[in-house]
Image (cartoon, rainbow, N blue to C red; front, side, top):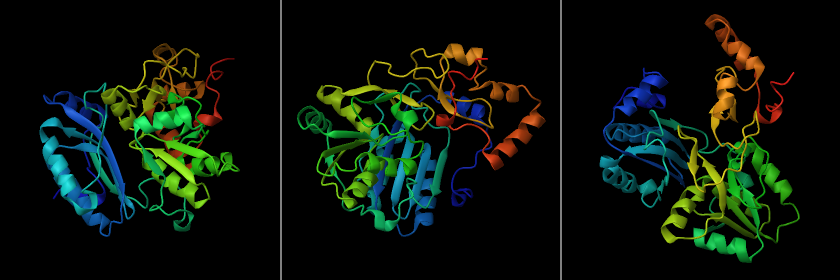
Length: 352
């Protein structure tokens, strides 16, 4: 057992550049996947330690959250250990029937995660809900890609994107409600308010891999919505199904993912713009000012022009001596002085 396993994840002495260099030296391919399951887990810390030990032996990388309500995992598995990994997961009583969602496109050739983190949390997706706000055993109907397309075409549904706005900005289903939320916790009450008075309509929910829709569908049914449906496996599995079954693709743009890739191409069209110049782009990046770290869309020209920063304020910071930058980082942690995405106009930030 790794001594760090009980501390919530792998402690790696290599910095990001070192981890990337280590991955680049690998001579084998990796498979990027995600899976989740809502299931009551009694001994979360014991399970965390067991999973960490086994998956470290298989050279798996990823970010895995475990709580008493289940598991939420995004991972990268060496191709030559794939069969053993599947057998191990399905041998566990908690996860014997859990489906895997495998990335269709991977620009990083499986280099989607840099290290292995297995952590115990209060919830596998932070939602701010109380137990009496939903019944996770009473969820919406799960639709495959074919049924989803038919429902959109024939049943005049209300389609709701259950992702954060920076995800839906680069890709979404046409006509979907796109809440201007920065967290799932913010989004749930927003969606309930937008759907008020439409309890008798057909509701179609979708998200990246399905986990947020599982909770949302239970939440909406608890609040009186009768015909609630969700895209089974989320956008990730929708992309696989339309490819394998040669179905029409009703998703526009690119799917945002929470790993080193940041995106998967689902359709060839670009529907989003660089936040600084307005040119077509879906290139998400984090502001290089570590005190800010704002996630925003920045084309390559603007990255060079603005030194990878989101605002002139951040350009000034990154050109200060390191000691002063460290002081600013500490102060930013205490005061949250830098930007939330919805609070700053990046298009005008550099205009005088």
